[in-house]
Image (cartoon, rainbow, N blue to C red; front, side):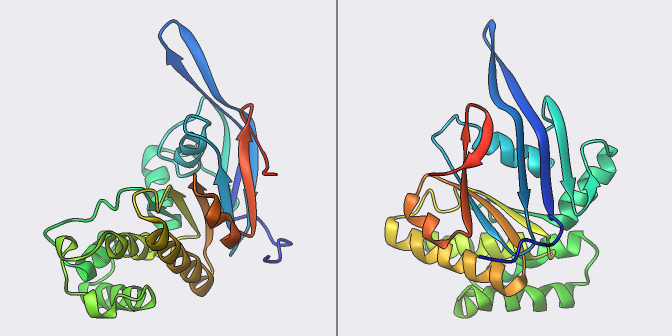
Length: 231
């Protein structure tokens, strides 16, 4: 467990999210609150439809909730202009999804270098950082391979390295091993866990896989729309 005495890197405050479902309103999150601190890995457990993805999308500034606040590194972000929200999302948040969404025509190094170049980093510097991250992820011998030449676990490791490419403050991972067999799932999550520790990045990881909770500093769940400790 990390020391949580510092300031949260991510704070969700009184977050509510509702959806129109036919003629009724589906209330997914109800005044939900959570703090994520630098360097800690937090598991988010719950069945499909419980609100895990809605929480991650709001926390990552991908969706606008019905109400509430999202603070990233001490700044409330939902009230920012679109361009400013995009900048915060690009610079401070890394996303890992169930599907890797790699660019199939590019090799592993280029997939990890491109987000950096889009953020203004020169090509040589971006490729060097990409090689460093991929080496940490155990892919030193696969850096020149395209996604189609790699296993599912290797592709997801590339996706994790890509999420780290712009040195975010927090990783938001939505079922990052959901497409993998149990053995590969454990190995990939170990890589994610090790990389967050190496880089000092916080992570909020939504998963169905209870075996992965052993890696977490703490585990929470969504119950009746609120975020509560998992027990």
